[in-house]
Amino acid sequence: MWNEFYRCNTEMVLTKQGRRMFPYCRYWISGLNPYLKYILVMDITPLDNQRYKWNGKWWEPAGKADPHVLGRVFIHPESPSTGQYWMHQPVSFYKLKLTNNILDQEGHIILHSMHRYLPRLHVVPAEKSPEVIQTFTFPQTEFIAVTAYQNFQITQLKIDCNPFAKGFREGTVPGRPVKDLKHKPSEQEVDASSSKNVEENEDPDRMKKLQELFKMSEYLDGDKENDIFNSVRDFLKLTKSTPVLDKDTKPNEDDLKRYKNMSWCSSAEEARSALLPCLF
DNA sequence: TCTCCTAACACCTTTGAAGCGC
DNA sequence: AGCGCTTCAAAGGTGTTAGGAG
Image (cartoon, rainbow, N blue to C red; front, side, top):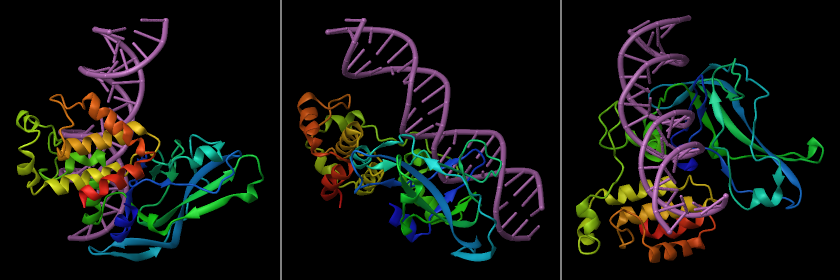
């Protein structure tokens, strides 16, 4: 997902009250001592000393940067935890918020609009001196902070990928979210557990919808089996590739067991890998 | 006139409390 | 009493838009 945004030059919206990042940062961590405690910290650093402007096609330098506001970091709320804890699941920083309010009292990370930034992850041993802090950065997570989206491609990607922006997806009247785009199977669809599948598989929008779901599932935390299961269930609901759902769109007991056995999925990553061949 | 920022808006998901049956 | 499930409302996360500031 980050790579996809990176290709279009990622933008992150800043608001006075604080805005979450999307995509947010999620890390698989390895190589820690499983018995030692660590604190995970994120901050965001300027990539250069320039401000930028959008010329309608691309970002171009537009003068000297405003001074960076130092000292704002986001400590992962589950810190400190053992290395074993951090390594057994991906670590998400989805609660981190960005603001352009230099008087912010909420502890959000303060950035300047129209400047380029790069998130950094710091792994801090809880019981050792600070000089053994390890810092990690990933070039594809760089972004330009904005107060309103400039590049339409970025807006479209956000809408396509962020569940909270679902109201703006295809079929939307420009400027106004569409009512209830959620795919609720109609009576007809539910009744057609087998013979109608062939017909529905020919729906030209089907593959697009599945790909959207796939993208959304990427943002589930790996430790939440229910999330994974729901993702699988939603997937099956959407594909109707197997009569998993009863008329109330609940899986029956057998199917439940069958897909619970997909605790093949110790992570969302595995769930997605399993679903991948079905989608592409 | 232009660029950038802000607040209000409608729609969405998430979360947690309440109610219910077993 | 405890558990699991469902329902529902509130809280909070989205991009869009109009209008304001400089």
